[in-house]
Amino acid sequence: MAELNTGDGGGKDGGKVRSKKQNSKVDLTAMVDLAFLLITFFMLTTSLSKPQAMNLGLPDKETDDTPQKKIKVDERRTLTIILGENNQIQWFHGLLATPIAGPKAAEYGKNGLRKEVLKLVNEVPQLTGDPKKGLIVIIKPTKKSTYRNLVDVLDEMAISGVETYAIVNDITPEELKLVQPKP
Amino acid sequence: MAKVKMSKNAASIDMTAMCDVAFLLLTFFILTATAKVPEPITVDTPSSTNKTKLPTDKLVVVTVGSGKENVFFDLKGREIRKRTLELMGDKYKMEFTEEEKNQFALMEGFGVPIEGLSQLLKLSSADRNKEGTQVGIPFDSINNQLKDWIYTARQANIELNPDGEELQFALKGDAKLQYPKIKKVMDIYQDQKINTFDLVTGLRGKDY
Image (tube, rainbow over all chains, first blue to last red; front, side):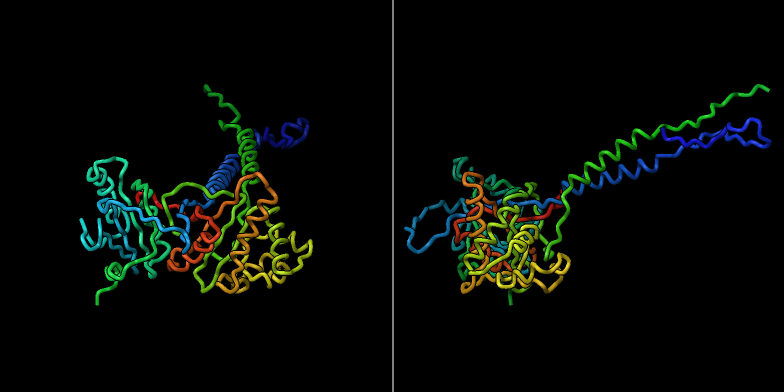
């Protein structure tokens, strides 16, 4: 036990013997506190310092000699999101020439893009009449958009449960015009 | 006077056993904790709500910094690193000594052209991570060393684990990077038919 022998009660026949009444125990409370603090620190840092990873699967790159397969997709299923500079987003549902909704600006986060995406996630299976034919999101990052924008939108897809989405790099001039700052 | 006899011992709990346990646990956590390796560049990764952890072994991480051409290459796994360096040496007709290979195996990510690699290996770990020492791996169309590093890493992995698991790939980019630059690195992955890779992100707050 953590007690220190202080040699009390050793001199019965001495003149002045001050026998200490208290056993001088070392108080370990502070030490235990410290130890547990350090334990907590190490526990948290070891498991939390590992970075998160977002898995991204991309389609095979098309080379010029691969036969082009045109897949016709119902335009009612597509939502196109254009990422512009200065964190702005433009989205439209359907084709740009004949949009079902939009093109409209939106913000990142739960009050902006999330609402629109979630709405369409619920609406599209009803429109097509087939629960398997859900929403298809086409993400078009422009040259001025940042990596954070892309990750934010990809994250949005994961949150809203959009299963089919694609990052498309060819942007038509009309689409580009949407995110261009107005003079 | 009737004196109430107080017990001489103060009513304190004996902490010894608790202290022992606490320090035992502490020792355990310190020993199992992996020391954080200093990175040559600090990258402010974008955050996501994703909770999947990055694998720690058999992983290639290409870090794209916010500088002009700052691309760093990191490969986890000592044996693979060593073999990768040998294969890269063969490819670029360069000889690396055994000591340099061992140094390379223990090193963290790096970002120098292969011509400057032995110079970098001579430096101490602290000097290596000084700003301006590592300029990035060239990855333009004339001198695409990054592509070769990825390719040889895969080669080394196949040699060392003929029927083992495949190498994983990750991309770590600065949040403020412009999309075309990150796209360039994605293209290098995709040119080698690596279509699935991880984007390294930080953790986002709960109410996002």
